[in-house]
Length: 426
Image 1 (cartoon, rainbow, N blue to C red):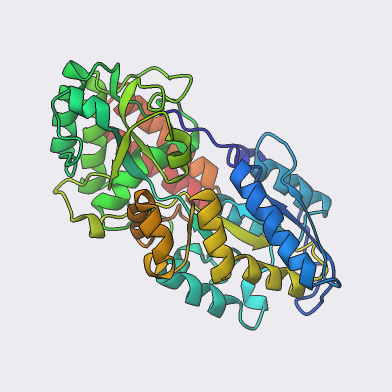
Image 2 (cartoon, rainbow, N blue to C red):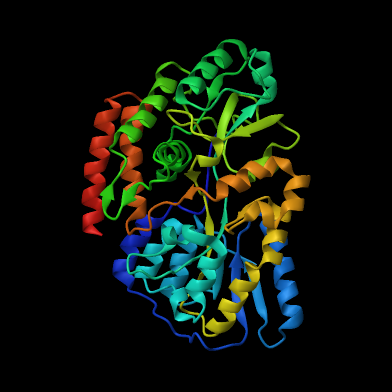
């Protein structure tokens, strides 16, 4: 399916402008309390949740009133936040901070580390568990509160599977070989134009929805980088690249862009997506979902995947930072996490998710596998020049894997060399 995001398209611009404009620096105090402002996502379900959360807080905190609004319109959320950091007028909290942008915002002086609060890191760790380590910055501090995740899984169209003679209730999609075999059958007998239609375009974030989930799964949870060192130029990375190269070479995945949602519109039989898609496909597709495939077919409860998370950050223009931190904890409390789950279907980054909200998952079994996967999510590396790193990877991926102009091994090795240089310069 075509994957678009408004949250991540301007960090290269951010890097350039930062050098010219300097940094904001903190103007508030971690002990000060009073009125604050917050921004939340413009996603329809999240707006409803955000308004309800704010109303509940304001009803019992008249001296610490929240003024809330959607993130202002712009080319991307990151571009808007960056401009606000430079202007020194960020809100106290943004409840839609992209992990890929945090290192840049930190360097601009735009963020307050949770370490400044006596219980900051302790609270985040107790709520999220060991996964919180992925969100720490290079200086060892935590500039984002892990909030919610959309673990990527493999959706499939049950009617198309049945038409092709494949078992829609027990699809054999655990290994690359099984997915390729199913893809060939679906293309021949399923009446679809594509077995699967990942976006072949070269926006840097597209690799989060084709390569990265499978790489995370194949490696048992590795990130793209370990420190400054690329990890994908490896047997596991090559296996993922060869899997996709086969899909493209055999015409099972088209090399042209589909201007729409190919899965929702019945053009493709499978799609990689997170639980956000459940509402999008409701009434359109009789779907099932399984963990992303691995080379050897790991058990479902051991398969890692990409997180597609959004987090909460406190911005340094905030004067009343103690109130901001209290609101961040209120917004991620067990009660509010339950309401977020109920209203959006997105998974709070909370330990023991399925047991904490057992009644919800009993009533909504379609979300239970996503909740299980939430505990095995892999984040993008928390590194400067994140956009340049991912763009270098995407450029080579497109050249080698999608359009076949070089071998997958050449593609990965060239990307690794470029990224090593990019990281060294940051």
